[in-house]
Length: 426
Ligand code: ATP
Image (cartoon, helix red, strand yellow):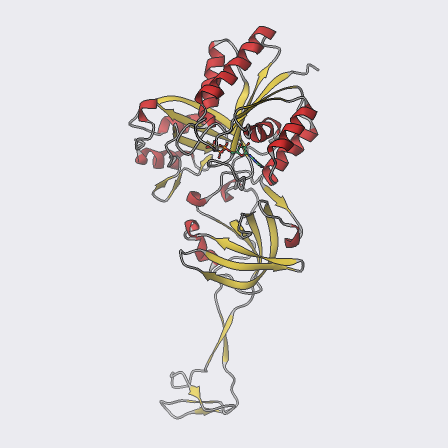
């Protein structure tokens, strides 16, 4: 068996809220490598890491790609590394205090220790020192620019195992249009969605066009889907009234729920972690100013405040229906405030909800109390019922046992698996 030897390249932390995007930088590097006769192997990867990492610009994504070392000689390898480093140095938003690029090169097999490092970068928080020590122990060549925080995500991106994965096709604008309103034909996006969903997903949310970023970055739009083939079809269906400079397809862990750890108890959860956790509703949901909705989830190990924030819109109408003692399974993560941010919910069991009413008289009028322990009387016909109790009325819960409910596309995390991708549910 021939074992292919690769140069793995990881890049992270090149952009700022004012511009650039590490995917664009990678796309531009890949095109320049191609011009030198250096092709990359498979698709480049966009790996989303811990959504609660403090210094993220937006979606905490690291980029990686690999080059087949059998295809290039030592001279070409040197040229490849030079192109990568020069571009990161030249195009990164170095003026921004929080932009601290990192590039890593690694030749060899991705080991279990590397895979575990990647999972740690998705599940928890890693320091620059920890990443650097790990690189030194693992023979990963690191290049730090400024503080070099990007090495944390760059190592994770080359190391991340991808059992479940999706693809994203990103189109880029010409520089002259950066920062200007995007000229995407919304009708064509709805048309594309109609023709390609659910092979593509997260395209629209009602009239909201979800493929369009709201930041001044180089991206015109991004379409997410199950295969590169469907993404190319979808791209041809989307019309835009501005030119596309280039496009690139990334293989990614987006929409796989890879960030969620299955844990047994509430007490085992920690801040900045994402989990699947079950429990009962201890305090029924209530809304605070701003429209954020909270309730307390409890199990025999402890309790935690859970939230459906205002941007989750109609999802709150589902949460609102929960009552004390309902059993639920929550999917989501714990942010800096210690509150569990719900991404989706599964109803495990519903408490019977009843209210009590006075009986209705034979004449059709609802009866009133005849006094303490004296039964009921009818004000219309004078009828009396002395040995009758109030009648229990079963209330519709309007929630379905075992059913999953999810936040809307516009409020969904990159890593959250949409129900349309979940097989064998409900
Ligand atoms: P964009 O999505 O626009 O490309 P971003 O949201 O990915 O930007 P970056 O500018 O890449 O944000 O910054 C994220 C920073 O957080 C990087 O330096 C990355 O190395 C670091 N990082 C990633 N995961 C972790 C983690 N688990 N713990 C600590 N730092 C992390």
